[in-house]
Image 1 (cartoon, rainbow, N blue to C red):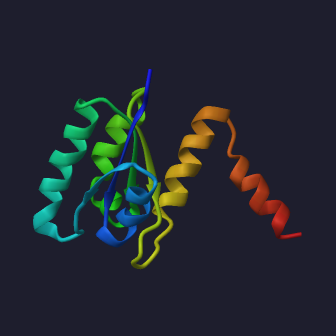
Image 2: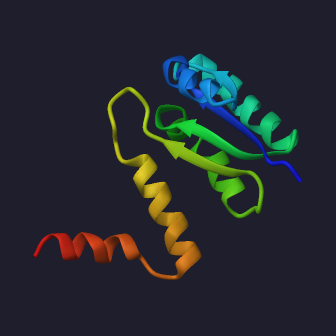
Length: 116
């Protein structure tokens, strides 16, 4: 079985994904476009995309929908840092997923070890 991969977010970042053959869907982070981004995320999930890369600026605004899909096997939504201001949403999302999978907050242990 082939896993379909999609990416959506700011068009500058989407060029990287397009270069490696991933289906890209550029969107902007404006308030008026968020309902369109929500529809697009649900559409991609419904079309059977197994992995969906999404930029942090869009993901923040779609947090509730991302949480809905976090309890499902597919799609796997991977939040990546965008070009704008970073607010650690991607890191918090990754940390939550790792804690769920492993049963422990291994990132916290690494952080504590780094402060020695």
